[in-house]
Length: 436
Image (tube, rainbow, N blue to C red; front, side, top):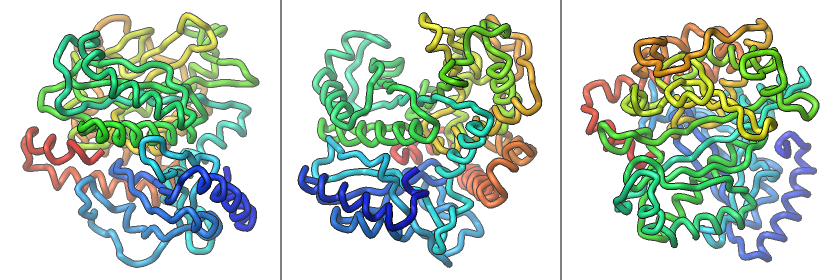
């Protein structure tokens, strides 16, 4: 990754990039990261300051690790100290829907150039590197669901909805294409004004970067069309809400381990052990992948949100859905219980850590759930406090995240639980609707 290069090399690379993008009309560069509450935060620099930002980073106080969704701080959040936010130049994109701007994901370092132990993006990178040490790689992708206000009424998944937003969705596709993102599909979803978009899979960190870039582009294009996009888990009490389903496949030597094996539905032993590890840690992983109090207004049976701790082939009510695909090399698994309030780096890093633990223990998947799991399979935590309790008990995630990141995540979750304890579902939805 570019942020791991020597400072002088990063500066030289940034100098070339800055010259090129300034000639293309870029005036400023956004450097973004996601906090533990799932909120995307940014710092920006003029394009001619990109070289210095790449070499030395820009200030980003460690207190952001304690920020809640409403910008208040968890107890213990300190105003003391500073970190350096370093743009990853390999992920820099000129923003088609925000003329004059480019965006790059950022990694956080200490003032002395050491990786910040609370950096979520570097946590995802560490787990990917741990897999690589075993000769394994993961391709991942996060489905992006959102709801726009004033959406065209009509049937779920219906042509009427697509017609009503043809210009809007066309402009979104154009913007994403200009940003070199390969869109696989885009369609109206279940809820009025809801859409879903998926892009081509990538490595774990790049997949999280892509999810952020898609969401930022959706927001920008929406505003240009007089619409406001929400990625919140729920935008209306009792509604279906927005998922952030994580798809992933395990690979060795260019071969997808999700097919051609002797395990269930063609899984190899490594793929089965990996997924079994994910399933074993799923209650704790919810504290990373469904991190909002509002997440549990979505995570209920009957809405294809994956509220049960089970797996099944093409079972859309199971938390872990196995997809064999019409082309064997496209076989993958989908984690359906995650939503768009999640910090994607935390969610992906946690899943990889759980999969690694499953590999280390050579776990097997339990019996498959072939029908509706309601009443037949264990329910996942139905509240954030229960998910956090599972995270506290997870040695796998605590060891993988490291003490500082693990503790700061728990502190933020506990503070949000307390902050929303007396709120009605309507008040919770209103408080988070446009925070993500």
